[in-house]
Length: 302
Image (cartoon, rainbow, N blue to C red):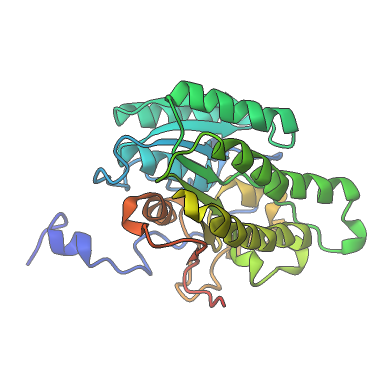
């Protein structure tokens, strides 16, 4: 008989119930949404992620790092020994301050850079400021994204399409271009794509299209900079419980069933994504380039 803290129970965890199967109530937040107001709360790894020093001394810029997946990645990177520059919208300051505090509790440095990635000038300024604050840059996570559900293409405004593409893929071009001028051999770029790149939901036409573009961008850029010793990869999340879903990212009526159609029968938590980003940033993945690592609860992908 074993107690709740034995090594066996920590290692042999059933993925079906390692995290709870949530039934979120119908709720609405103004875009971009806050983790602080999400019901139920998402697990970003504050208590659950354990580091082993795999990113010791790394200097990372992470976009969309105030909440959700980006926050979980930022916390994991800090637990693994990295200093982190956090990029986020000014409206998300409350969440960003929380993540900064968690990082500093880990004994690592965190720098806050609020701003709008649809602004061309801000993208360049962001990279420059991050390099100055961190003392260099050798890891970039392009994670920021915009997702607004629209049921009928007739109601999909030109403004929304433009903002979604600018946020999700154009900003990725701009930030990567600026970052690569500072990145030495051994650096890494990890982009956030989605299951939507393979299985587009009818109500997410613009969002899903950008995610397919990110897959292509990742594979092309990986080949271009491989000779410089810089690796580029991507992570494709499935249904992950974040503020993106309640700030018009999903139809409100669909929220209670969010993620239940996966083979595991539940939505994922942001902290479950973090190890994929850590792996692709660490030297352990030195022969992995142009890959999209799917973390989606078992949903089949090409």
